Image (cartoon, rainbow, N blue to C red; front, side, top):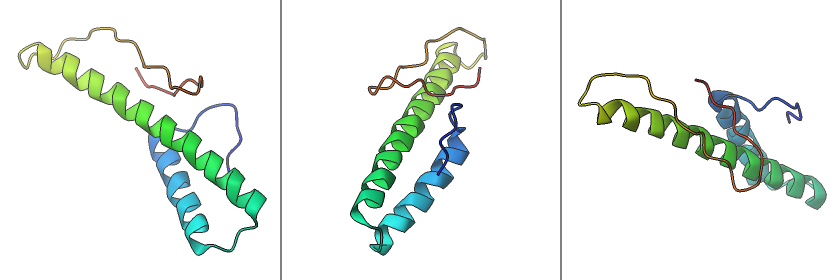
Length: 89
């Protein structure tokens, strides 16, 4: 599992989440390790949801301009757990 300070990009987070789900589905982890794995999965899920929400906002901003792409600043939503999702501008 990745414990670095820099959040992974969406694709990395999704790949890690898929690996965690596979480990949990096997059912052979000790309880404490399963709980840590589940917690990391929740963090990654929130990160991915934040990344998708930011992408959705960017698309909506572009479509509001009648199909004319025009850059407009937007706020990346803060996750409910207080961590900041990585977003590419």
